[in-house]
Image (cartoon, rainbow, N blue to C red; front, side, top):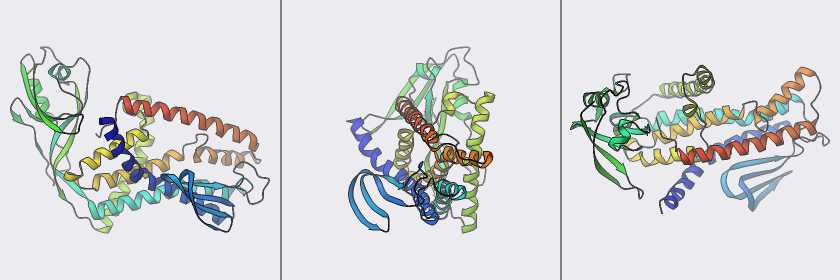
Length: 376
């Protein structure tokens, strides 16, 4: 029943969260292709199989499809330049613009979504509680009985509710819980947690155990934590402030995507921390944000949609075969060498790239199921 409930909750969240972003991406390709004079055979809302033909205008059939996730654009001859109105027959600049327009539309959508999120829905946390994101096997927390997802209410009888100063840029300290654990090294440690059951109901659970003598004081419990909002307040931004916050968020995403591979090479972060998240993980985060909307409102969910749009745009620009960035790379090579790569060979490269991407996506989905992604 829990699996069925998760699926029934996840499907609409997936459609609401990713559907419009994928639609905007394909709309960018569509508008640029039309402007370039490329024959667009079909613009489909949703993914096939086709449910209905809405109308036909010029060379383009506008269709409604059964899978309500995004859209698709079918252009004539994406690798075959024999038709003068095919994509492949267009000058380099128009092929580049048509390919780049999809990610560019995601960037525009990201700024608009983030701007509206800050302008109309912004909230900030005034009180929060610790949530256990991960419990290291064999750690003191594992022996005491902590589980991932537990919200810590008290530790050794001390209230763990954290009060956030709205006038301070500093995040709430993790020291209160850590200090209680340090004080209990070699002694009994007690805690009261709020735990969500398989049916979604939450119950208070009493935990008790001994933190072994000699435990490392840097990580006495052996857990990773995040702050769950228990109380928020509305924040009002001027349009200029809202745009500034949206721009900062966009810059942060760009900096993170560039910085994570560098940090991974340096060893500053682990491979598990840097692992990509697929549609299952993204949907899980969306469900989590919706479930917490009674406290934080819609701001975190809408902001996440804006950040996700930016990430989709940047990911599609990676120079990987089958992605927009991979196709753009072939245009760059054509610019440099002065002649085009054989379209048949290019088609084979993108075909192999698609197979690899699908296989990688399947692996990511498995990881998302085995080790669900939680919010920091």
